[in-house]
Image 1 (spheres, rainbow, N blue to C red):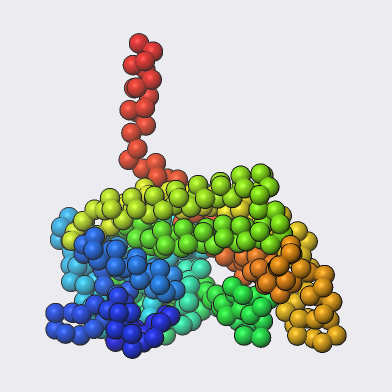
Image 2 (image 1 turned 180 degrees about the vertical axis):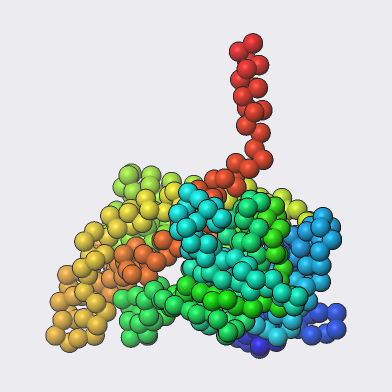
Length: 433
């Protein structure tokens, strides 16, 4: 499969290919992104692959398809619909053709205090405007669609739990990215700087973040690509499965990135001769506590799993707690790194100044660290911290950490769902009796 060569690593490395691919019963090889986890072993392999290669866009599409496969079976059992063969056939076609999809979920929304049916303009949430014998017609816009202009397919899902009055907005379907009526207003956060600026942007010199607002101007969707149409009472459930599955990326990304912040802090303190200062050691100890907590939540999420409709879902509480844990502490860690660097985090000379014969010796004279730490290695770390804390790309990453796969508020709701609050009250009343 072409997808077997996604990401880092040599394409002819047998071990790498085995980790990233799945062999179907007929012998065809597909990428693991396209294989819904049917067991804990599948889920662990999927997460291990996420650790080794980039792929948030792929992960979102996989979470969306898997979530639909679970909910389709429940809707069919309840309503006698035929969504299961549709989404299963679509998932197989998508996998065998090794396609790239973009997940279209977040509606424009308008007045957030009102449901879709209460908006002055009903098109602010994607809705069904016509039902035909052979399909439906949808209208509206989805925002924050990652890599939309690079996609073969758009997977449209409701972004909110709907009520009885919102049946027309309770729609899930797949749309070719070049379907008639699809309009994309593209946006990007930063362009790749290239190898010449690797010294100054060691993290983001090759980074390119792309997203789009996707407008559906009366787009026809044939029946075989419609996976929900009016089943409002299953929208919240679908949203829950998607976010839990998508947040497996948090289990990979946040422990890894937090440990990099710890490493940068320890190394900068060492370079500056301050690694034995009590206040610095105390703050690094707090960072280590967070990293250990994230590791524990990851273990819980991947070991306290549920098999639902034949598909493996990680523990929702642990997935959401992992995101909440780092979202509330990341800013403090970044502030600490800037404090360790001081002003040079923004004002230090460029790597190009180290190549300029007129300035190189001066920079190397005045930007040294403690004895034995030269200016080159200290400035390289300063630029690394700048790229984590203060560059344009780091700003995008920070905001993405807050909003991607659901806001902190949505995560708190997910954590609290099913918690026995009244049991806590009864325990206190028993003590007071």
